[in-house]
Amino acid sequence: MHDLTNIWREVRGWPAEQRLALATRLLQSLEQEETPVAVSKDQQKALQELIGIWKAEQPPNDEQVESILEQERMKKYG
Image (cartoon, rainbow, N blue to C red; front, side):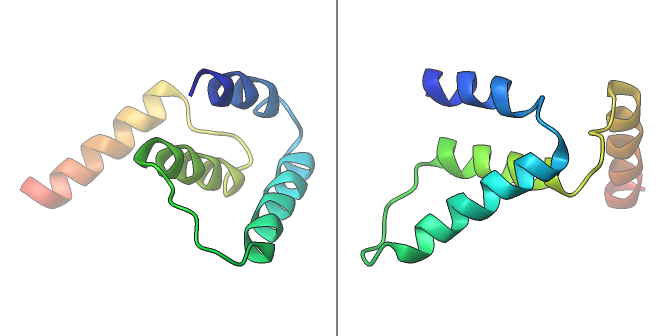
């Protein structure tokens, strides 16, 4: 898991176009494998975080995250 953290620290500074190219190649490599591969919860979480970042030009800052969370809490709990 430590290696994944180091890789993420390196990749997150790349321009969006390069991150998307890497993601495409990773996904293509999965399609080429014939046997299903078990993916750990940590790996799933890391991939979901990467997908979320690809969808945004710039990740939200702490204030924006707090605002989003508050809005979602209001929807859920009123």
